[in-house]
Length: 499
Ligand SMILES: [Zn+2]
Image (cartoon, rainbow, N blue to C red; front, side, top):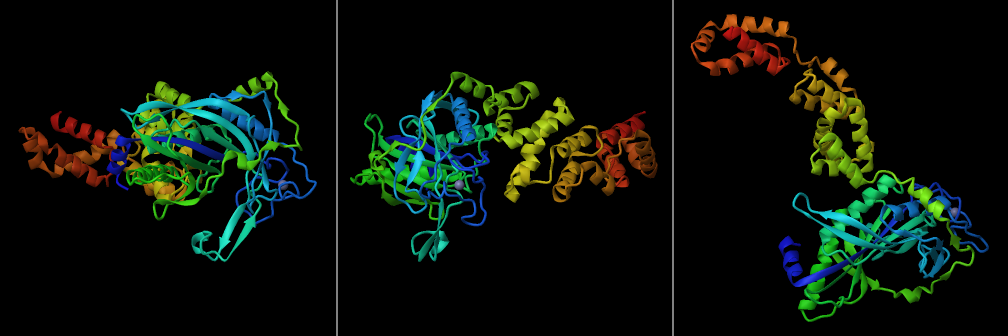
């Protein structure tokens, strides 16, 4: 869909977007109400027990660590933390949910009333604040696998299989206020939230594996109108790009319906990344259809304010603070500081390399990470944790260049080999004999031979043709098979020619 089509629609209509973001607490060793392990994959139905299979008589025991992670998430997003809270049963029938109800939270979530400021666009962008209605805790469902259709979809499938390994995984749901106005704002919010969850260590937030799932409630209304339009809930976006594109598609689709004199229906719609469109799934259930009631197998919670304070002390440095520190301490450009601090693993990598190389080389470290390393990861579709390249290697390569041992061009070759083999830069330089020669005496010896072999050029240079310096530098570098330090070669030649 063309960008200007969206801009045209947004000139006439205001989009009202709220996000519901489910995050599996993969940091928890065990499920929400039983001792089964939390892990992705595995043979189907091997990580199950009577509790998460919903067998009669099995009793849930709440996972304290999961509750603490949720409260930490609330503290990091300026939420009020409830001192009285409770789990409720949410009734609905679906084959991936063994109990036919989900233990969730209703009117007493652990966290509510928060907010998050986002920056939209790069330099010259704008800031806006998105309200956070609530963060509550619930249990994840199992997974259906549809067999016989195309790409595991239910359409055309002959039968379905169910895997309960995921059932009962602690699942944190964050609901925003409908404060988001554009697909880009939705993407910025989800990105920022992910970077905060990663800094807290709550989850691996892997959107492709579904440990972080973003659903969007989208409606539009004519500019100037105060009444809300009818919303659709868009699901199945498994990347930030998909979130952006699906919301953009939905805004334009609703505008087309209204422009054609039709009415938008309240429904759940499914984003098809291949076809780049949403399609209707089912009409959305109203909240009362779920017949929420307090979970009778668990007593309500009463928390001490001191307990909340003790959790607040556990809050680590969050991405915005980290970005500002990178700017202040290392003089990094804001854009670079923001990129490095957004991903926790990347920030740790950067800081470890700076620790070794020294703060005065932080800029060079950042350049290597955002340049060669980022390009490499991008090409391989890899995460920073997957690569053979470790922080000491980047520190070493920067030191080799800064100390004049290798040229910038040689450093790129060293980097490429280091990425392939995982060998240390110093060892690569040694083995390839590519060490740059900065030793003045060695360069003088070669320079003297070059001058002696080219008496006419020497005479011309001394008569005023100073542009010939390039000819001499080139000749010396050829003799030294490119290993001479260009700056030193230049200095030595000038001194010999002019002295
Ligand atoms: Zn279990």
